[in-house]
Length: 441
Ligand code: SF4
Image 1 (cartoon, protein in one colour):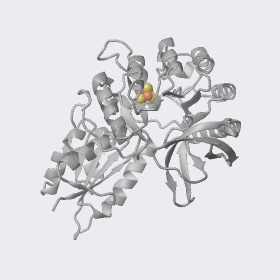
Image 2 (cartoon, rainbow, N blue to C red; image 1 turned 90 degrees about the vertical axis):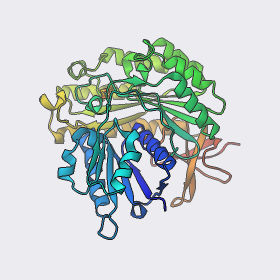
Image 3 (tube, rainbow, N blue to C red; image 1 turned 30 degrees about the vertical axis):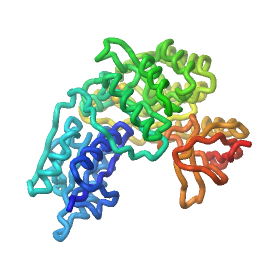
Image 4 (tube, rainbow, N blue to C red; image 1 turned 180 degrees about the vertical axis):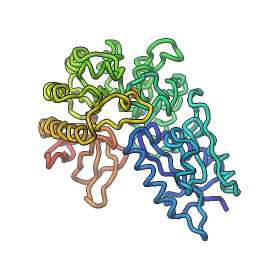
């Protein structure tokens, strides 16, 4: 009988793609995949480990899954991804319930690791080259019928002073364009209509393997694929958004007018200290230009409070910028001073101050978001139906302005919806920050 394997994926969409690749390899090797860890012979936990909260989430999961191991059912627990890449075999000492560790350079070895661990090997660990070319592995799409993430590069060459990602994911490596196009066509053939283009920094796509920025060319090629209706972009580095890219985004209906541009802060001193390229003036000008040249654009960013150099004046500067720029969507995080980063070495505001400031920014952003949501009542929008909520007894979906998992959903009243299909709806109400829509007349 085939051994049963369950996989739990934590962290970001880029990690989810690694999980989907492992699911493909496992299925092709003849294992049976199950959704409930209690029913599995081996459980894979694919982790994130770049900030404290992500590490804690991974550790809580390891403890909970470890409790499923009993003498009668000696399940095997394999921890993969960023946490083992960061702490390597030290994790075996701290958490004896772990049977195998697989780093971010070794996802492709998962079948071999499963084989060893299920045939009685005590402890197995593998940490492959994190700078090797991106593995071109098939995937089991786990995000439903309508959308799929597509990773165009791995790793990061930026060296932001608070970030450990380059040490966990290696140097920036772009995938060959033909492989991305081929994968996108296969996704379209499966009925996927929305492609979500991801990488740590998509604006650098092509620099390493083609010697120049190629995101515009890649997007134009993706736009030509029949069946792909929406292309959503995640993580554009502000100073790499050039006129050509703006023109490509503005001039192609399939590219959603939704841009995720993490800026982290606005104060020049902090940006410089944290090795971020671009200045306060350049970021302000970029956002104005995007609004001018891409009508209706919805902007998302991420911000960190409590970075070194952030006193009251610098924090106020950030608040003033947000009041002025009216960025519709923002993720705000207090600094997690990670071992080995510059930010952890430099003096920085204490945790309480950083957390308080993050809360204040969330309040400010709630006002911006409410204003944005209210402005949409009465408008007609195309939505992708993502599913049916059994608790609410209601269908839900997203327009161009909502990215999965980070931006919430629009409730769809009425009958006749189907997950994975697109519909024209009218936004009829806003209730406590949530939008409600009905089929358009
Ligand atoms: S660009 Fe993003 S992933 Fe790269 S170092 Fe900076 S914060 Fe980390």
